[in-house]
Length: 124
Image (cartoon, rainbow, N blue to C red):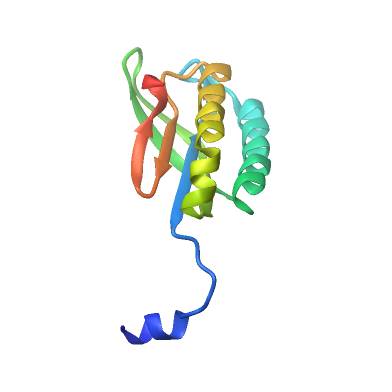
């Protein structure tokens, strides 16, 4: 065991990570910041309820749309760390939330990331 691990023994930790990328556009490239704010607030509340807490990060994302080519937009990444058990218990709710964002914001896809693996909800 290395020195860092020795110093962290016994401290509570969460080994799983869940993220949903919330777009700022609707119908691929139309202004949708009001819906984004709604879904960010809803997501912070849902993730906090499922996993005990959540964080929202602002970023710039790009998507190669089948309809319009490259679309660049301001996104918000919702993130929570969690236990494997809490993810197992809430994965269907997380998927439903991603589907809701995709549907209501009329997106081609919404990204869901779990433990550094990206899932594209175009196929959900």
